[in-house]
Length: 236
Image (cartoon, rainbow, N blue to C red):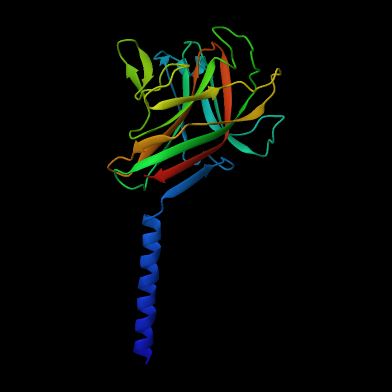
């Protein structure tokens, strides 16, 4: 009798585990949320479209770290702070994150939603362009890691995927809006933007890379706080 009971328990365990595995593999929609309360949640910050020169990081004031939101927003809320001074008139500040554990060579529909803090007043003026309307938000997905590479001919760090240039889309990144806070005051507010649907096939390792950034035509300092990022992946 004990052996019979044990057989039933083992069989039931195998059945339940099998059902659990099937549910996981058949998961069609995944919703990911990053809020940066206690860290960077695997996001990495970097910069492109700036010269390979001595002490350039200091001169360009390049900064990326986890940080509280600025006043008058909720300073108990965490964010990703990224900052740069656009001396090159074309600085690209970006954050990236790898998604792994996906189905290999699988087509996905991806939507990226971001909420960020900006203090750039609508219609404001600055050197080279507006600190609000000449700083462009872009987002996209890639099968390879987005990273800066040195163009030895020009001596400039460039992005290794196609982001377009300032107000134009690239093959790998969409223009989703600008840095304006929608007010006439230089006060930090939260702003939400979203990509359109992106269709992309995961690579042979079941990976995709997310990338979000600012493409600047304003020759001054931009500081952005990414407060929340939401990603929806749907198998197709």
